[in-house]
Amino acid sequence: MTTRSGHEASTALAPELRVQLREGAPLEAVATAVRACAIGNGVGVERSTKLQVLVEELLREARRHEVVAGDEAIDVEVVFDGGTFLVRVLDSRLPLTSREVRQLGSRRLVAMGFADALSTRYRPSEGNLAECSLDLTRADGRTIGDEVIGPDAPDAPDEVADHLAIGPLEAADIPDLIRCVYRCYGYTYCEPAFYDERHIRRLLAAGLMHSVVAKTMEGEVVGHCALTFAPGGLVPEAGRMIVDPRFRGHHLAEQLAAARNDRAIELGVTGVLCHCVSNHTGSQVTALRRGAVEVGVLIGATDPATSMAGLPDGGVGRGGLVVMYNRCAPSTASTLVVTKRLAPLLRSMADQLGLERSIETTSQEPNQPQTIASSAVSWVDGGRATIEVTSIGHDLLDVAADALEGFEGLDLPFVSVELPGADSSAAWALAELERDGFTFASWLPDARRTGDVLCLQRVSDRVVDLEGIRCARPEGEELRDAVLAEWLRVREVVGE
Image 1 (cartoon, rainbow, N blue to C red):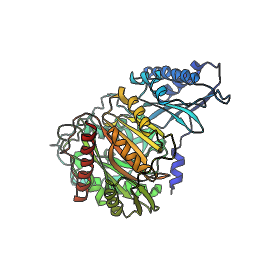
Image 2 (cartoon, rainbow, N blue to C red; image 1 turned 180 degrees about the vertical axis):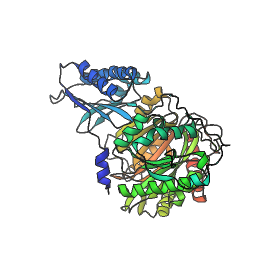
Image 3 (tube, rainbow, N blue to C red; image 1 turned 90 degrees about the horizontal axis):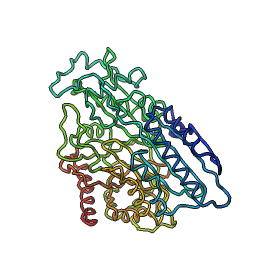
Image 4 (cartoon, rainbow, N blue to C red; image 1 turned 45 degrees about the vertical axis):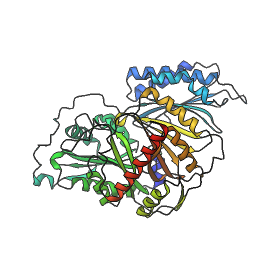
């Protein structure tokens, strides 16, 4: 059995390239090496060359920072996790101000498409850190060849549907999995990586995805689901449920989910998250049968172009997701610090899950000046950005504003902020971030080593299908109504 700590070790990937650049050394050589690493990992020549230009600019910017204590070195690292190609540039020079960060030329390059995301921040005891990344999970538009199965497709014979083999995804199954995705979704599936064999292999090899598939006796893949981890993450997400329309009505989703749950227990995680679509409640019902509880609602988080053959489409506008959590192991008692408005909501969810949580509502300002945070962009469902806050400081709003400005050129429809739920200033942060239009989205128990995470959401000016957010039971409807009420209240206050 693999323990939680064992899984963390498996996903903490060592850098493929680590270089220390001294004053006077040619920065072009380092950028060229980064380009070579990108090409070697499957990044196209054009994207790799643009990344090279961006890295050169990041190195020039680092060299322009004032040297303090005689430490002039610049450290460069390249990390690839199977889906994201990440370059880190770290210098121990004078910390950058928020204004200086906003004026960096590297930000303009990212807005022009030289990378998919850029995060620039100061890390105490380390220095200025710039991280730029490329998302390698975008579909490349290849023709797969199978036909998309329509809603009128005949059901599979019982003698076939009742004798499916359910087990781990093997490397030899990946091409057939891609065909299954295409048969079910065409090119609308929300995870572009599932159209590319190379990226699926990398996710499996990095330990970031643990897949279960259903196969016919002839070896045809007709169902799939998976646990996926963020690099270094503790709580995986249960999702990627794909069932061939011909095999619906045979409880295949429940069988796949049960096998996935067994895998979660083998991995030793405390719980599993699931983001369920809300235009139909089938996936919610499947999660509820495993003992899951609704812990959040994401408004406008899904692309209206995503559709599943034979299932109802959403209404007009972007759809919602219902976040559900399923306990797999005991959880340590802890504290959540939230606003008075949110306290009853968190109390109800914790009681439903049987988690021992003390809910505090005191709004306490941070005891430190600087916020420690990072940001990332995913191109799932038209693009989402996440600002992960690990320590709350007085400059939280400035940090959020800097991140939002950096996202402007990407035209993202959905941005979230993750806060440490046990931080004594979490309630203060929740109230402060409302000024930027952020409202409560979800609660993620045991998501970090430091404990629970409170997620906020900020939805762009896209049309949102509020009527299409459906829940499978009254408790979910109560949560949905409370989340929507908070969202509408804050939108009115900030004038959106």
